Length: 437
Picture (cartoon, rainbow, N blue to C red):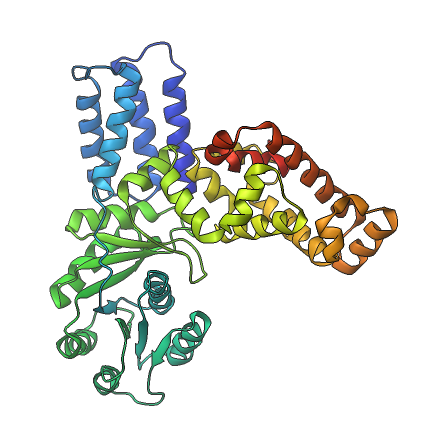
């Protein structure tokens, strides 16, 4: 998320922390760096300069007890960035509700509907996806396919050009969370306003969510204001944060209009939607660890019993395979490192940290070509078996040998580490074992 902005911000803060002492000149230089980074991320210029003056003023105020000037300056930067990026986390209620999604063409509204359904599905609620986009060709098929992918209920009427009729019929169907995907347009015109107000009157939604793409930049301010006047928006979802360096504009523009960002999407799969927490978001931008989110992802992705075996060092290749699958479910390795506060580690890996995912995928193919006996006892793998496995998996013998070497290395390393330490830093250990140093 906002990788370029984050990298520049971390570089500026690292430069500050390396200084012997910090005074007004050093703070001014830091603020100039932050200004350039925010403007590059498409944040409104007036807001940037307002933020700059606040940081300068607060940075040189009387030091709070127990903090050095450097620590105080970093704390101020964190607090002020959090303020303009939303300040507080929006509440996500886990109860029966009706949700109306609004947005223009290209916002990612339909795929966001499915991601939202998946989010509530994982919380134990039964979603119903309703296609009221009767304008865009293939909107019906797209939402139907996504509903099938996540095994969620779907309702739509192909060929019916009356979204109000479709919605009335959909409301006769059961569902804990009814998510209505409305039509989009190239602009918020009078026809779209009339249509979405009709849907609003029929649905009587608990939440009216505007879907905004991150690459819209500062135009988010005008869109959120216009949709709010037409509909009374309760929340915003910012999409495509992984695909643009301009996402700062959308996030801060929402803040400027008083709207609350509830969710963000950072990928193309149905799992790539997260509740937006400005404090955690800014912490990751700066390079502070977000261990709470990391542990939540790990718990959802990994088999706890097999993870226990890994921690004890008592694991075979079957268990190892399970943990690789779990790590891949957690998303790109760069994101995992960011949550650990180790984003800089990824930058040092030749070809980029996410290139390691390709290595782990090859290892999965290798292990899929092994027999149960070979996975349970890798010590029996001689040259002829390695040749057979490489041929069967479509990989090279060097890939098989690299997997075995890494497996043995991790196993030895884990046995030397105390279990308590591994529970807190085991990801770093596993990454080292994958050849990431």
